[in-house]
Image (cartoon, rainbow, N blue to C red; front, side, top):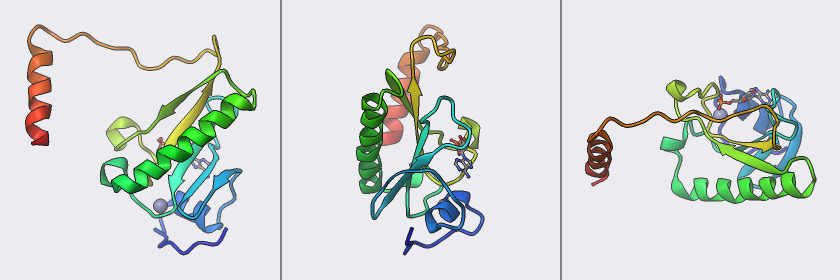
Length: 143
Ligand code: AMP
Ligand code: ZN
């Protein structure tokens, strides 16, 4: 894999992109690489990463994210058409508090089948008035 992007030395995904560390490639174009996660939730669990190093989604330029999502859809459709799974989850951990362990932006595509033993997060309930206040807080922040 030829690489013209700046490599962060302590970033394992930059080393995969540069070809220094092997991966099971699923898709590649000039800006994005998709490869199998080494510890899959289910077979076909794929990571979609920009070739340019950005630490997290919050700091990734929107045009880069748009292209990443195009590739996420492409890989997701392949998961379905290949017969590997009946559905898939798309996930992204932003920040250590959210479980991000590799500080190079990446989407997870997790193939899913009915009764495969996995479950997503469990929702809590708002106390009365809290939802209104939280939504207002977010709207104010985005002004
Ligand atoms: P996250 O916790 O969202 O940062 O996810 C990082 C993911 O990278 C984990 O699911 C790891 O299994 C995966 N991972 C770490 N090292 C490698 C590697 N060398 N090749 C493929 N996947 C990896
Ligand atoms: Zn990197």
